[in-house]
Length: 246
Ligand code: NAD
Image 1 (cartoon, helix red, strand yellow):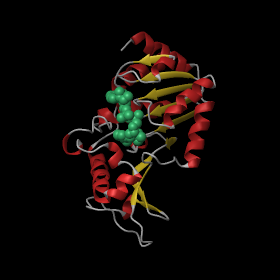
Image 2 (tube, rainbow, N blue to C red):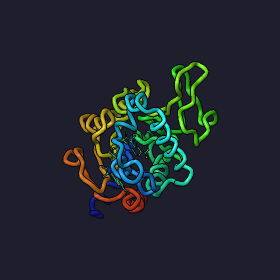
Image 3 (tube, rainbow, N blue to C red):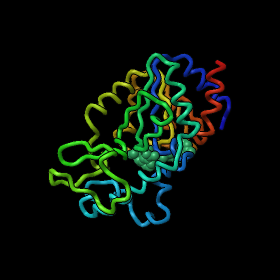
């Protein structure tokens, strides 16, 4: 991690009044939630994420998909927001406009105190059937198969699966945030899953400065104004220190 880049990132952020943060699975890794790539171990190693997170996968094997999401939902009870989620939440009050656009479905930004969060891919603690939303309070954990709603359809997690479109109003809000921000922090995303991956490019095209935080390079890295090569929970405390000094 290059400290000079962190200092430059803090100065860029200080110069802005409208800031957006785009996050992916990597921001939750230090909370103990594996990214999809890391999740390919243990019991689930033999399954392709496409089998577990697609409408076809649910149609072919609803029990398997249900149990995978149920396991992830139950795991949420044992994890906490990490230093990166907490820093992102602390930044919110420092800007006149601020939004978190997240691809994560774990709700950790909200648990860290972030108020303006756009969940691009939904949330695993909400469910829907053919015709309505079902809150977590209606769906107990530990079920071995998806419950059937009174309407006759299977209940499924309210997340966006591979091959599915994002909710229109959610996407509109994310797009407007991206094209209106002056600085976008892009944290812990492989920048591969579309359409979310297009948001930093759209922001850049409209003149925003892009700061990427990731231990690995991504397709975005070459276009980013600053690349902080580090795990998010390591980079953020230092970034906040410089931000508060600048
Ligand atoms: P991804 O798995 O494709 O990529 C994760 C990225 O995080 C990689 O670029 C990796 O280098 C980086 N990373 C790993 N450790 C990190 C750390 N400590 N700090 C910062 N970055 C780190 O994830 P994605 O880009 O979010 O896209 C995959 C899809 O997976 C998304 O649709 C998302 O909904 C879903 N997903 C969500 C969760 C979650 O909610 N926590 C977990 C797994 C997958």
